[in-house]
Image (cartoon, rainbow over all chains, first blue to last red; front, side, top):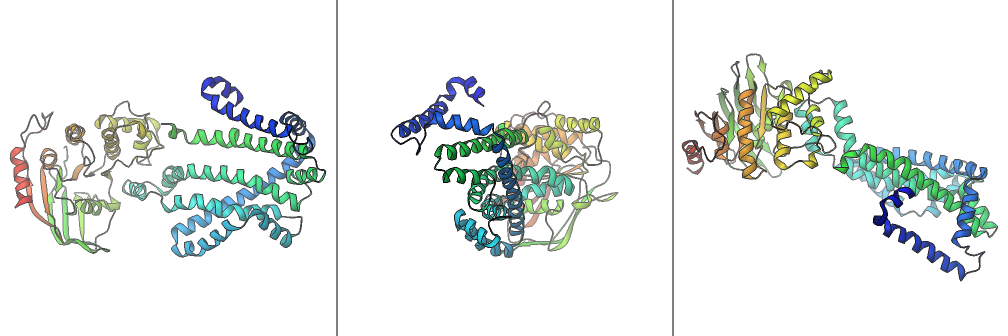
Length: 255
Length: 256
């Protein structure tokens, strides 16, 4: 990514300026604040690199990533299921709409508290809370797509006697694909932040647990280092894995 | 057109109405016509041209009666038939190349890649889009997109080809060129052609018989006009304006 930034040269000047602006502002504020409250960018980035290569970070990251993936998959499945049902049956739409609206209004902290009260501070709290919070959000992305699947393309399939398999594979799924990728990106990116929050309150492992641990030690450097290190990993997953698959599958969008 | 079999369009006691708001498009419509060449369904907007083509294609069902295109082997329209259809707008899949858009509708029993290529190339040649295979719809002009739609309608060598105002959305410069090319393609294929238009010149140029509809509630057939002109050598509809009498005859029916 950095190589790409450098190779493109002048075109990336605004991006590089934004990065330097953030780092400069951070440095400026940290100079006028005691270092235990806000360490400077250099010290924090050094701590982040130390954290990222540690075995402890690897172990706790795996716990968190596993929770993010399971929660996302559960939410992805149910959001699609509810969206399909709602787009086909108007009664299902009327049933789910108020539930979705209530789901959207619940803050993550409250959902986590309720989760801890119901399930105790261990077990599936994280997965249940994150899935429950993601389902309404993902539903909002995908429901209009199912609702507005192009009727004229189903007529095309009918008039040319295209088989059901070919119709779904080559006409329906490609229509959904850009929105499914939006769901994946949104779900994973929002999901990991909520997962960390639930780990703060309900688990004795995971990146959220470690952030809370360093917060308890009044080590803001540790909090920032763990948060930034994990954020970097998630950004890499988003850019290098999801983005790559998306670019490969949606090549026609370039034209 | 090299149509050897005797093919007929049979419309018997056809009724079609739409609800909300209630519009009676056809009521007890009867018509029988031998398809000795391309047939045009002609009339002003709202007279039921698209509705009739959709009924023939099986995309819509009549409230009563029937509409059939039959040849010596039986019914060739609707779900039982092997159709080619050109919609008013091209209806191409933006995520597929021109080649893939055409091969998508190809008979699924054809699996051999060389046979698929042969069929698609032939259809592309008929529609005059040779060399466009790798392009995507977003890279094509309106006229080129409609040529792809025509190639897609021809790729299965259908026994019946339906075209619903295929050039209605194009500028006259593009449309007039496409009419000439479509006329040539029609003469090279075996299938029967039924198309709709509200352009009298297009009707006279492409069709051998023109069914003139009047607008009403319900619509009715005013007249069936025969056009017997040698169009083979026509390159430019406006330059070689041999259609004046036919066009006047059609328009007389409309304004009378």
